[in-house]
Image 1: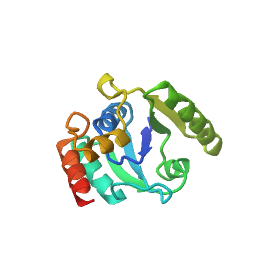
Image 2: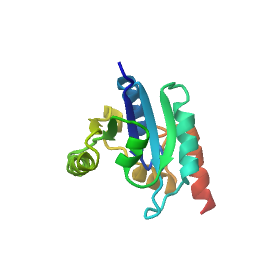
Image 3: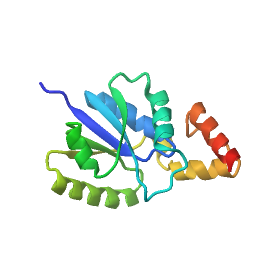
Length: 162
């Protein structure tokens, strides 16, 4: 039987416990999971690609079948390069569904060999987003229930620099 590889792409700015939840669950379904940090010049990020990769390495070091990588351009092309058969996507709320469905249809047209697998978050992370985490920290709130201690420390330091 051949190895099943999945790609979990995202900006991960910053990576949250919701992301980790999906990573852990997808790593049980697939033989190999590549968490791919998107580099997008059109989007301003709080953390550099390298910083986001460092945080993800830290969060996933106990997961032997998970690797962290970065990419630019089309996700399905990167999936082809990595011989991934599936893209992992998270669906939190109904509004995510329309966006993810249109993305999946376009990805299927671009690369029919790659399927999209949507995972629902565990209950504590249903409404969690990186944007909300950043806003809470920016206004002095605590986010220890949304991110790892390392990520929270980096967030606080980033906002102190501003």
